[in-house]
Amino acid sequence: MAVEGMSEDRPGRAWKSSVALAVGAVIVAVALVAALLPRGTTAPPAIGQAGDVDLRVLAGAPATWDPAAAGDSTSVETIAQVFEGLTAFDHQNRVQPALAESWTIAGDARQIDFTLRPGLRYSDGTPIEAQHVVESWLRLLDPQRPSPLASLLFDIRGAAAYLRGTGSRDEVGLRAEGDRVVVELARPATYFLAVTASPPLAVVAPQMWNAFDGPRLPITSAYSGGYVAAALDESAIRLEANPNYWAGPPPLATVEIVTDTDGRGLVDMFESGLVDYTPVGSGDAAWLRYDLLLGPQLRQTPDLTLHFYGFDATRPPFDDVRVRQAFGQAVDWERIARLAGAEPARSMVPPGMPGGGSEDYRPPYDPAAARDLLAQAGYPDGAGFPALALVSSGAGTESAVAAELAAALNVTVDVEYTDYDAYLGRAGTPEAPLFWTLTWSADYPHAHDFLGLLLESGSANNEGGWQNADYDAAIEAAAATADPAEQEGHYADAQAILRDQVPVVPFQVVAGWALARDGLQGALPSGVGYIRFAGMDWQAGTSR
Image (tube, rainbow, N blue to C red):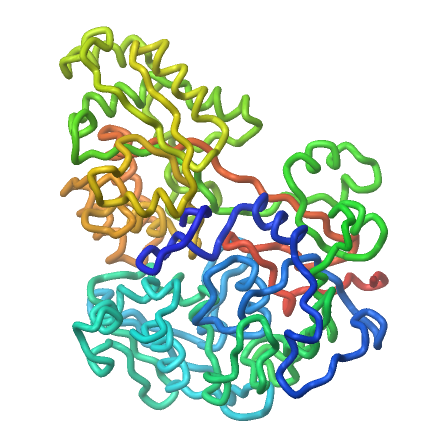
């Protein structure tokens, strides 16, 4: 998803952001005061002064507590602690059972049947039922109040039609059968298992459907996750262990999410003992790794975010594959990324994500071959090449790319900076950019989130309009098998086509960093960027 903004029909453009943006959100988190408490309540005692706290984590305050309304990373990382889905990701980006104890894939990968664990209960003791899962998901598709991430469910038969008003609620391929949730898919889509672990698809109790009021604490409390949202004040959120959690009460009974740094730096908050876990930026990580005390507590966290360049393959000059190939081979993408202090991307699938493969799927750097390709396309030494703008919201490397294109191909590329909303407003119009750069972050850690959502023919996220039947067939074949080796092979075929056809060029991946207190176990974020408090504990003999 592009971290610069979000769009209702674009699942990758919303809640997941880069570590840099997430850190920024922590710094600018504002005081929420008692106005954010449920109406009719009084402010609780100052958090951090009433009772023991087992863990303090630095993060931003959520804009909403409602999974169906969440469209930003800050809200999601808190929502994921108090609401649970059928599945969850572990720190290696693998799908694991959560509220569902098992599932089966049937009907040539067009149906997935989930079986709930026996005896599931919300935090208030009421039973969690399969119908609640169905209703929770349908809330995302409500045409009157659609979720920012409604399109996560578009692989379900009839889901998109219901949202757009061309189909009925009863035609959506979701139903409860006893303790089973039956999901009928519009096409083979084994990757949908990963989709179900996305926090917006968490299960919400019927008594809470109308309990949400923006950033206020919900007016009723019946949570499905490991924790209960217990209190909120101007500087922190208090979470308390859910005694009815399916995995048993979490080891850490009380967790505080610190939302206000009071002007202090992130490293200072950690070094002063005010928090036990905090994200830090790459600039701080550069020196922290050499600090004798803090260095051992610094860890790199997975952040499945990709920065890439793309072309409009439907209009001249980039409707000619030779021009796209020339632009791809004229730039030393790795050199520019490294000079910018970033990790070069060798694939459209970030490292650590299943299905990415180990090969280098970038166009080979070969300026001489690039000049020959441009000449073959009718632009010898750049003669006659049209005026061109590289449109970006500001990644910082565009001028270097333009300079290398000028040096290698003798073409002039002007860099045009615009905000992301303005960019979206131009999409699909004659003013849409021909050459652009975007950042996409995973809604769920699966190769389809990048290769399918971004580049399949007809996808709402296929900005360049590129189409290739062999590519689509490889993506479809990968979606139809649950065998990891077979998926890997199909995705490798798809990425080889991308390397040859160059509708996009993978440029750099984002590395996340965090400081975690010695002895704190389980502080390993999944690729979608949040840690599960319910899986954390202090090593024997240590505590905060």
